Image (cartoon, rainbow, N blue to C red):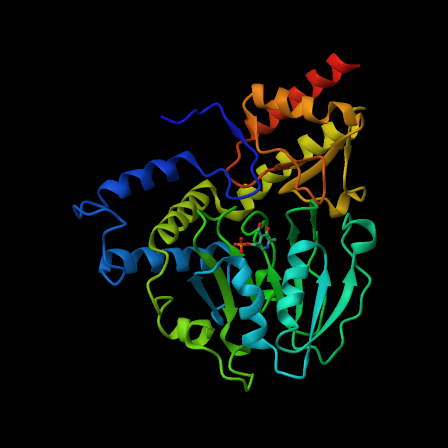
Length: 360
Ligand code: PLP
C-alpha cells in the first residue's frame, strides 16, 4: 500500500489520481480479462487499439477540438517536439517567431534554428523570466508563432492567448487540460503527458491537418506527422503502458466534469496558496504580476535565507514532498497539477502558517 498521507508537489513526473494507479496496477497483471498483462499484449490487437482510440477521442472531446485536428500519442517527450515542429512546419530560409519565456522556450528556439530563421518576438529574460511579455510584434511572414503556455521552472503562465495572424503553436506540457481555453485558436499543441495527462513515455500532439505538407524538405518517416496520422498514431509500436495510463487519466478527468470542473478546483488551490504567500511575512512570490502567475507551478522564496533548508525539512516531516525550487529559479516550487487534492494545499498552507509563527 502506498502512503496516502504524502502530499506530492513534484513538478513532473508528478501526482496521479489514486483510481488511475489502482486500475493500472491491475492491468499490469491481467488486462481486462485477457489473461495477459498490458505489457504483454500486442499493440495491434483490438484490445490496445481500443485504448489508443479512446485516448485520442477523449483528448478531442475534452479540448473540444474541431474536425481539422488530429490527436497523436508519440514517443520522445516534449523535447522531440522542439525539433519535430520546425521540421514539419518551417520552410528552410523562412522565419518562425518564438516568445522566450524561459528554459523550455529556449530549447525550442535552439532546435528551430536548425531548420530556418528564428525571430524572438518577445522575451522576459532580463527579469529572470518572472513575467509574460505581452508587447511584441510578430513578422507577418512568420510560418508560425510559438509560445510556452506555462513555464514550469519560473512559475509564469499566459493568462490569455495572444492575438496573431499567423498559425499559433504551443508547448502546453505543464498546463494541458488544466483550464478552459479556445484550443481551436491554435494550429499545433504538444505536451509531454507526465504532468497533467499521465505517466512519462508518451507525448500528446494535436495538430491541424491543414497546416501540414507545406515544406519542401524531406522529412524522415518517423518524424512526419502526416504518416503518424495516416497510421492512426500506430506508425510503430507506441508507448503502450504510458498511453494506457493517459487514457485512464483522461477518463478520470471526464468523470470529474472535464476541464471546466477541474479549472474551478485548480483556481481554488492556486488562490489559497498565493494568498498565503502574499499575506505571510516570511514568504514572497517570485512573480509580482498576479495576472502572470502560474496556477500549476507556484514559485516563491523565504525572506530569511538561513531558514530555507529548515523549512524544507519541516515540510518533509509533514509529508509535504517535492517543493524544492528548480536550481535556476531558487527557493520553492509547489506544483498544483490536476490530480493534487485541495486538501494537500490546505496542509501546505497550514505548514507555512505554523512555521512562520514559530520563527516570528
Ligand atoms: N516543456 C515544458 C514546459 C516542460 O515543463 C518540460 C519538462 O518539464 C518539457 C518541455 C520537456 O519535456 P520532456 O521531458 O517530456 O521532453
